[in-house]
Length: 115
Image (cartoon, rainbow, N blue to C red; front, side):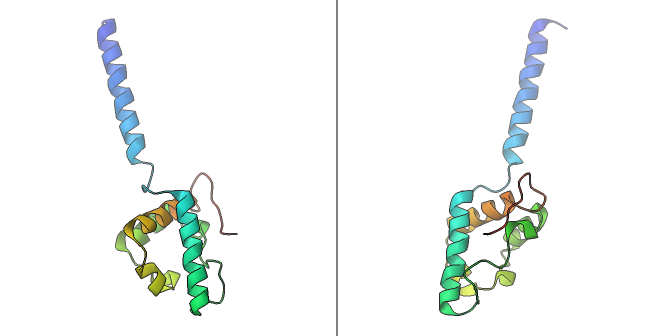
């Protein structure tokens, strides 16, 4: 093989790996905004009296990435309670919460809990 062919193959491999990594990152959303919005939902819900605590009862590390993906793909937020607040969220806010929960899931590189 000549040098030109080797360089072309390396460039192609780099391109393929880079593309794969971009698609494997998980949901598009702002994790920081998601954490804030997630907490805001429960503060509003507690103020309305549907839940006892302003602290979310489900933390990101309670589920795996695949479980979070299933919940947000089906948009079944019933286990979160606070249906009125979840129903009022925009798609962007929902995506931000998804990014937060998915990014700190039990099987993520850095699992986290709500504090």
